[in-house]
Image (cartoon, rainbow, N blue to C red; front, side):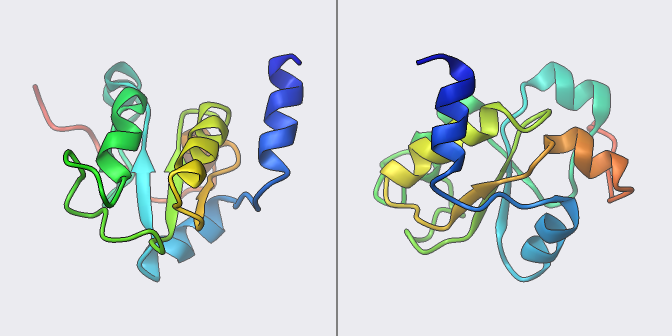
Length: 128
């Protein structure tokens, strides 16, 4: 199986959402999680209110039973919207979160780039 087939299989297990739906979900209490690496965040900016967790730490930070969980990881029923740069890595991340029991996890179709293209709020990264 190649990556395209894997993505298709993974994405078939949940409903992805677009930028407007992601903004509505966040307004209703969903946790937006930005998994982009630092250089992309510095280049393109941040989604205001999103929790930044780089991909290699995601499962440890969002597992509600984990010893290294983020304060926001309050339970397995938490609505999580994973955001990567263009909507590919986030799909694989969602599959992993769902294996941990985070059954309401989804991702943003098109990633941060779709968010920005939709004219949704983007904040400048903090000055270094």
